[in-house]
Length: 370
Image 1 (cartoon, rainbow, N blue to C red):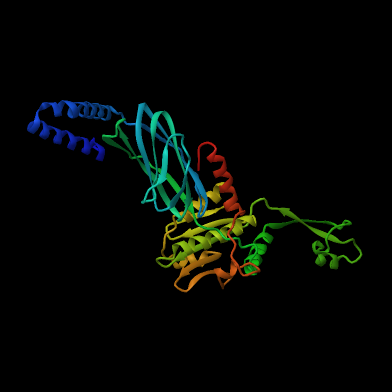
Image 2: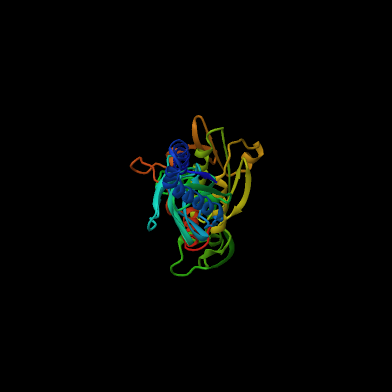
């Protein structure tokens, strides 16, 4: 606990009054000092007796760069107290707006931290919005609460060590509208491998001529045509992606590998990923998409082993010369894959790797989160 500027001013006035009383008599002391002394004592006792408010932070859903999220903090105090609440915002996000509170003065200070000066009584909500700025695993907080007496003479600061995790995924570009014929051909081949021969049967009206088994038909010229029946394989094709980059190019790599993985997952292909700081076996579905996005959020620069590159179906690399995607031995600049017909770039907003996570996040924001 320490005096505020107003408190120091009151102390200075009391000291000056004592000096005047010493020089001119105690009447000056009675007229000025006594009320100020009473106010100072009340203010000091009130501030000293203030208890630390209980802080509860709601989880914040993970999201992509440029997404917006609402941060909700509940403050529970045993008695009414004037306070200034300030929450630190890390490098991964920028505070953009504060939920207006009746009777409160709100704003964003010079360091970018949202603040609110209000009276805490019972349960109070402190809410503000952030825009996600940088890929990574970040933290929101800690929260500081500075309580003051009703006269504003003394203040006492409480620091809450708890923080809120904030996972920010990289940007994901839509590769469906680009000239990615190499990727499309690769995906078609992988999906084609999912059908296995089951048996032959007689040709029926409406069967595709592509399914006619001409070799068998040639051996039986007087018999009816037969067609090939395939056994549907419920398991998707499996593709592994190896991704590596030079120091300082990890953000470019994260965007590229996330975009390629999204494209493959949308094509119903199981995707496995090997990156310098982890290896993830092939899989599909919302949970696997969420796992991959979380991995791309914290992807680090580094090189892979030759064996990891050799066994991968697709290799993504980012270095000083740019980001490339190697498919079937062909090296394709990633910038070319994300070009639309107009030569612009389009950010992915509807891929399964993003859509599943967004649906999860939307559900979590209404209750408890991702």
